[in-house]
Each structure stands twice: as C-alpha cells, then as structure tokens.
Length: 205
Image: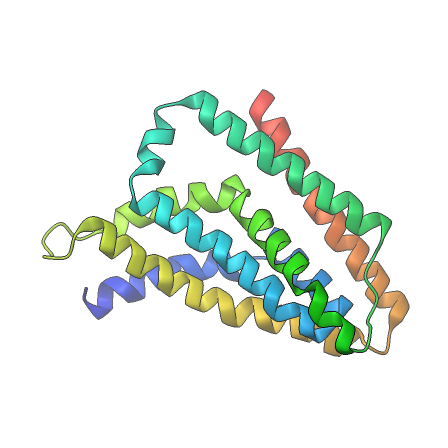
C-alpha cells in the first residue's frame, strides 16, 4: 500500500476520531474517575473498533447489509446500551478522584464497558463498512481483507492518541474543579443518551 493511499484514508478517518461523540464522552467519564481508569477504558473502546474492522474485513458487513432485520437488531441493541450508560452516568456523575490501589480492580469494568460502548455503536460499524472498501486497491497483491485490516489499524492508532489525551486531559483540567467536573460528566451522559435516542428515532422514521 502506498503512502498516498494511506494518507488519504487517514485524513478521512481522523475527522471521525476528533469529532466529539460517545467515545469522547466515555473517555472523559473514565478520566474523571481517576487517571488509571483511562487506559482500560480506551483499550475497551479500541477493541470495539477492532472488532468492527475485523467484521468488515471478514465480509460479515456485506452479509449483514443483505439482512435488514439483523441491522435493525444491532442498531436497537447499541442504542439501548448507549441510553443505559448515559442514564447511569447522569445519575452518578463522575468527579475527580485520586488514584489509589483500589482502582486496579475496576479496570475490567472499564474495559468491558468500553468494548460495548464502541462495539455496539452501529455508527462505528457502518463507518468502517462505508469507508474501508473504498480505499482497497484491487491492483495490489495484498488481499482486500488484509488491506482493510491495515487501514483499520491506522485509524485505531490515531484513536489511541486522541482518546488518551481526552481522558487524561479531562482529569488534569478538572481535578481541582469538582463542580465543573460533575457538570462535564453529566453532559457526557446526556450526549450518550442523545445519540442513543437519535439512533432509535432514525430507525422508526
């Protein structure tokens, strides 16, 4: 794969990564709970992205596209999960906490929730489904699936940097402002609820 092709894909995909959305909201919530939570939360988000990339590369995306009911079920499940996470975040907003030895035991919670947040977000899957095939070069000796995985990893690499900065930055900027941190956390919950609601509305309109 040539540098021009990779650069073109990165230019398009980075716009998705730097646009605030559910992933940003989740990274911020993790950062406000403590800096040690950021890495497992971001790892979960990225594993969800990787799952979407692998599904598209394996051709499952094309298969799902042929079955509207499967897409409907995926979207409903993702929307309902986002609503639930948003409600929980709104009811129990994060405030900055000092990292301590007890934080490590909650890493699995942040990791699994991160996988669900991005893995069940149909917009992540649909983005890769729409984007990856367009940048596959049929003239290359590499199989199309391998090209998609390489492109997906390039996008995920960018997301690692952005989401880590968002999570750590939230904790650093708001550590001395508990009320502001609470408001930001509540806004993150509202954002997740809004996206979940819009997904459901889009299904039935």
